[in-house]
Length: 151
Image (cartoon, rainbow, N blue to C red; front, side, top):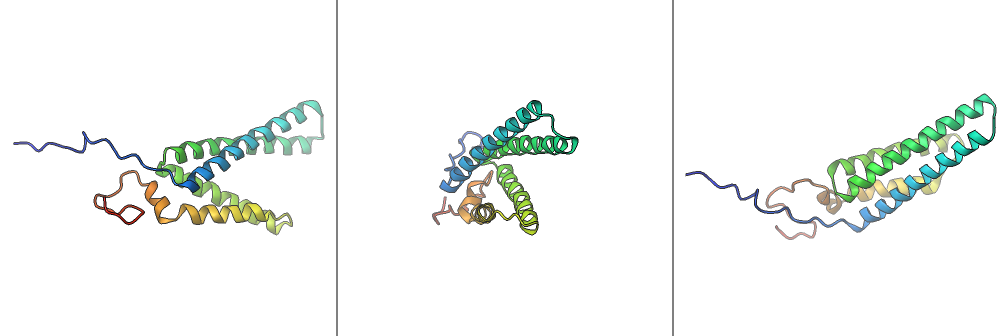
């Protein structure tokens, strides 16, 4: 007699997206839109004005940075929306890179305290137990829910 696999017939439970993840989604969307807008402004500035070669190179690098940042933010949005583990990882990597840039700016006399505080808050929030639990692809059987009740 063969055993019947009942896990294939049971649909996975719908996971609820924590409030803070929704807030990070909104901030990531705004960041992606800002990056696209900044890249467009730089593009039109480059084509309208013929600056010196050094300024032109800087503006091209800034355009590449803003476009790349927007692409990363789009992937962050997709991962967070779907509560994928790689989305959580990408948020942490993006926030870590942002922290690196903020520390660099701080030591070069251009601190951005709001961005620094936001990065720290994102890292602390994304490492909370209930948020970690929401991003588990397949929670272990019998593991307690974030509210403490057993499944």
